[in-house]
Length: 225
Image 1 (tube, rainbow, N blue to C red):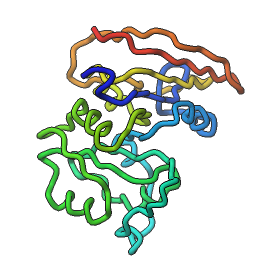
Image 2: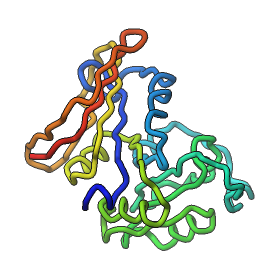
Image 3: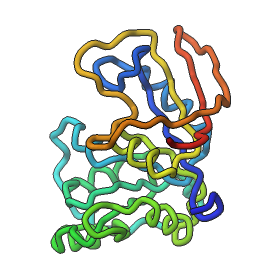
């Protein structure tokens, strides 16, 4: 897939000084202020990230079944969630949040039929890509062609980041480094369970000192090895 066939993909993560993405309190206001840098057309969030959000969520009501209100001036990004297992069953809550205008679920041939029905009744777009696992190469191409998405910001964990990076689908990595060391088990921004070791070469775009001893580092992804 060439650069012209897929959106520009940015991984944006907040990390501790020792590279962890959990086990510390990130500056959310700073993180999301910087997230506006790319004016993304879509935000890609892993289903595991949403499943980690503590509930309970509000009860579903008739608003969950209403189609999006088309006014032609809504410039908020689309929310894209890979969920082949059909685990996200609180789309009514996600749609009520002010960050996104509509939702897209990336599903596969293995996604249960009742979950596809659940999504369609709630006017969540369904994109089927892959048999058992989401084929992100195809997904990105479809998102560009069918939804006119040119820039995607990934707001996810290490596993989703690892899948996208190893597939050669990431253009830029943005890291907001917090001035702390986080203890506990490692939980970095790049995980590849079951994959042999390898490196990904990066090229520095920018490094900037921010308020309260934070550092913002941006890299261009050069190549995988």
